Amino acid sequence: MELIWDGLRTALGLVAGLDPQVLEVSLLTLQVSGLATVAALVAGLFTGALLALGRFPGRRFLQSVINAGMGLPPVVVGLAVCLLLWRSGPLGGLRLIYTPAAMVIAQFVIAYPVMAGLSAAALQQVGPAFRLQVEAMGASRLQLLGAMLWEARYGVLGAVIAGFGSVISEVGASMMVGGNVVGQTRVLTTAIVLEVNRGNFDVAIALSLILLGLTYGAAAALTLVQQRKR
Amino acid sequence: MKTPVVEVQGLRVEKGGRSILSIDHLVVEEGEVMGLVGPNGAGKTTLLMVVAGLDMGFRGRVLVRGVPLEAGNLLSHRRRLGMVFQDPQVLDLTVLANVVAPLRYRGVPGREARRRAMEWLERLGIAGLAAHPARTLSGGERQRLALARALVTGPELLLLDEPFSSLDAPTRAGLIADLRRLLAALGVTAIVVSHDFTEVLLLARRAVVLMGGRIRQDGEPRSVFWHPADPEVARLVGMDNVWTGEVVSGPGGPRVRLGEWELDLPCPHPSGPVQVGVRPEAVTLCPDGRGLRAEVKAAVPHGPLIRVEFAGPVRLVALVPAAQGLELAPGARVTVDIPPASLHIFPTARP
Image (cartoon, rainbow over all chains, first blue to last red; front, side, top):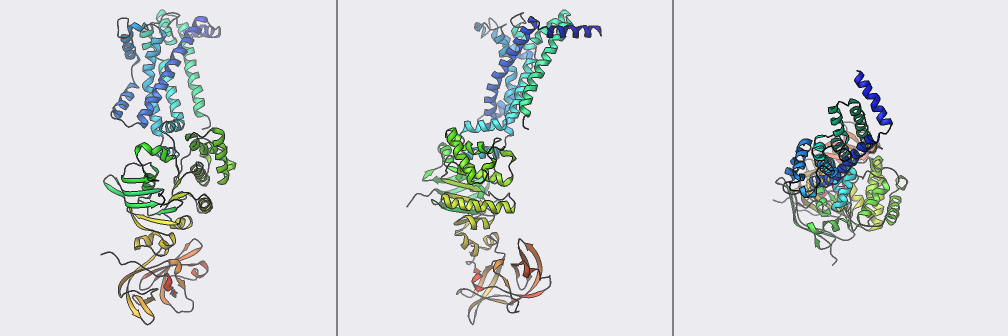
């Protein structure tokens, strides 16, 4: 019991005191996961639109691949990106391994199928009557997509919430491709694992609280937008 | 001769192996308001979707101002027409933004688009709702929005797919009156789909009757109303009395014999079997006892009128004013009159 209370007390102290190291780790976490989410959103929307509106051979196959990808284990993604970026690997020349960029890539791979799958589902929810109506109003394909995205915006926001949640909370891939280097690639999840291994439960609790706070804050902000005027 | 706005040639549409449409030739001229009527499943909506360029699953040719519809010109075609659906979908935006949208799609700048949209909201009587979310509108207001949205671009062709059928009677009446005024003022070429012939009578100058995907009759609405091409069309336009009788010659000219009833024919006709029809509105009650003897079977309200069913040598339906109809209890024996001029002789059935 004492362990928990002590932990909580130290944690609150670290958070309240804006410990520079904790701040740095939190900021990097937001940067890496935010960037990965935005990139995955752009690519995911494109793929989602293709799946929902397009008619091309292999559409069903692509849809099944995306759906399967929504449950991709982060460690496997980490391994794959690691192998690609390894100094002697095919993209080793880019010298990205153990940099934040490598983590963004790995997290992008994790979030992209989630975004694509969920935004395709949201677009497919828009009824055929709506599509016909907008087409009859003289919309081009791109304008139709715009109208459908607006119609499906709550579902798309749901995709963003799910995508961001999946990358900010993952640890395996970030650990493998980032290496958990102090001041360079240490993010909240990897730091928590390290501190627990070291026995520093109080720091681990502090970092966990911050992680929970960030996840909750982002989800709450998006939910607020999503539920406005509903 | 001017190029027709729409010309359909050898149009065939099949869905799931079933023929939906089979139209050899149909032309819609500039400025014409055409009513397209038919029962459910007649192919009316399908034809409209084909003409709108929203359903390309057809064989044959659809020419719009002489240019055949094809995948490459659908967008420019759709941008020249306005369309109102039976159950219009609205964008989850304000009423004004909904009317602005088709202008925005065509690249009209914002200020100009808003000005034109407001102008049309005023013409449709819903300018006061401009800032309201479109999803909060009532059925009638939503149809007015849909009309404003279809007309704001100044379409060359207006396509209306049963625009009134999901509205209640008073709302519908108001909207039909307004649309009638608008169509007359604009002179826009239009196709109005309906399964209610009275709408066509009020709005259109030409009626095309579609049944089972084929054109059964094409003519002035009044002429279809009084002289339907066959008993099925008769039923569609509300000519409830269709009988098979025998033409005999009488002292004052040919008469048609229906059992013990004999009716004067309005024009010469060779003797033999004949199919005749009478609109229920044309049948009158004769208080003086002269006329055809009939027994009241049932009397039910029909709007402000009473719909009375009589048993005679044939089944007879009449629409009579409520004041007269209320006197008619089932079993009552009365006499009725059918003016010769109201008697429609169907063209001899094809062998």
